[in-house]
Image (cartoon, rainbow, N blue to C red):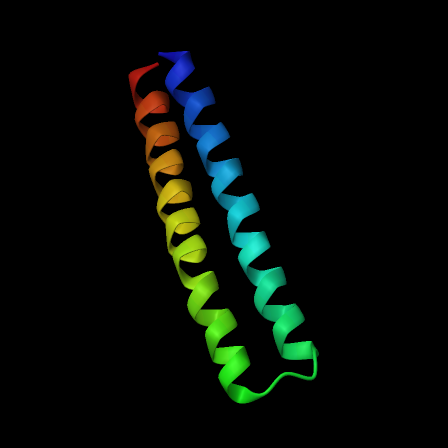
Length: 71
């Protein structure tokens, strides 16, 4: 059952990378000279990446915990 831990860790890492990408996208939009509507559009486009990454990271952490319990 060790493979569950490693797969979960990989999923969590992929989710973390996605969260960081989402943060960088919004940060660049806010630091640029964009209007409020353009910033809102950027945040709206970054939201699915943010939520998907958070979901993937959560599932990965659950897999790690289950794998530790099964070892």
